[in-house]
Amino acid sequence: MTERSGVYNELMSVWTVGPLLSIAMTLAAFLAAQWIFVRIRRPLWMPPVLIAAVLLSGVVALSGIGYEKYQHGARWLTALLGPATVALGIPLYQQMHHIRALWKPILVTLPIAATLAAVYSLVIAWGMGASPMVLASLAPKSVTAPIAMGVSEQLGGSVSLTLGALLITGVLASLFVDWGAKWMKVTDERIIGFALGLNGHAVGTARAFEISPTAGAFSSLGMGLTGVFTALFLPFMFPF
Amino acid sequence: MVLLRGFLTLVVFFLLGEAVRVLAGLPISGGVLGMVMATGTLMLRGRVSDELASASQGLIAVLVMLISPGVVGVFFIADQFSEHWLTVAVALAAGTLLSVLTTLWVMNWVAASEGKKHD
Image (cartoon, rainbow over all chains, first blue to last red; front, side, top):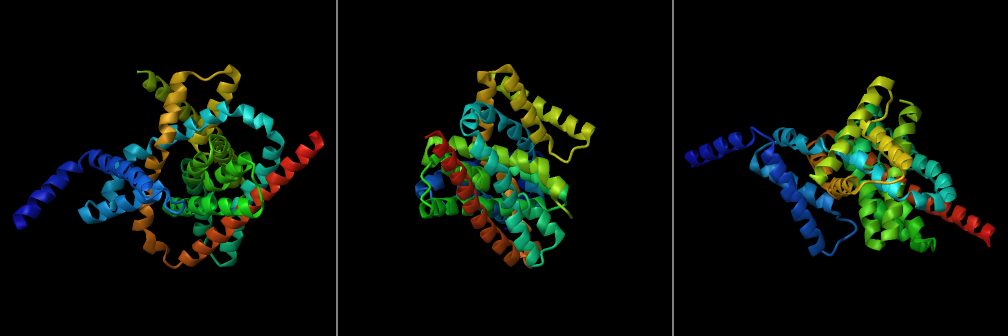
């Protein structure tokens, strides 16, 4: 038994010298999550990113690698979030004709809704006595992850709490847009898509692409514009 | 090779964004600045190359994977936030419901009044 665990420990120390074990785990969890998501019939409340994170946490805890070591290796992947943010600018350009066609509703809705997406939650959390660190972590909750992480860091929040808030917000926004559109009798897929992307970032956008390509395009647009708007204005408006 | 060229373009724009952030002292992440510069450049050029379009599609498709290591952190630091969880849960649930309804209402209203003007 001792010899076995000795071999295991030796293997682990060899494997965790470089980042490849972390990368393999993350890739495997991502692919497994996609597969499971399709198998359980794409439930709104259980998006692939949540499945992947739960799988990864289980493996990280059970294998004894430890979160620190896993995270260290995974940095090779998370470094790609920078260029991935730049990549969001390309669909933004490709959908420029959509923006032009519906520029007025977009222009009126964006500043109001993107501001309120942060303000509603901040006011509620502040009223319940949240610390400045928690408030800073919640502020970019409707913004796509690579941008939100940067905003949270700049405001003095916890990036991990922000990512958790982001995930919950994305899942809830997908559910609420479905309900809200039915309740308010909104049938325009462009509006539904824009609301999904504006409030639910990447998770909402994945949902929008399930509704229709038009909803998906408007969701990407809502996600991109909210990201830019929040990144540009939130650090200046945040009074803490 | 084609994908690599597109990827290099994205990385260069990210590095430019970081440069602008530091030199101008802006509180905006380098990725966002790079994105704005990339969109602006494409608008000036009036077209997007296939290599850049496919590299960007590829990265956006794995966005969920790039986020997941960070999300894992939520489970490992959860106990740090155990005293805040109720606040966080209420703020997120109520805040998101309100902002979703506001978005749908405002946009629907503006689009409808626009439509009426055109009729």
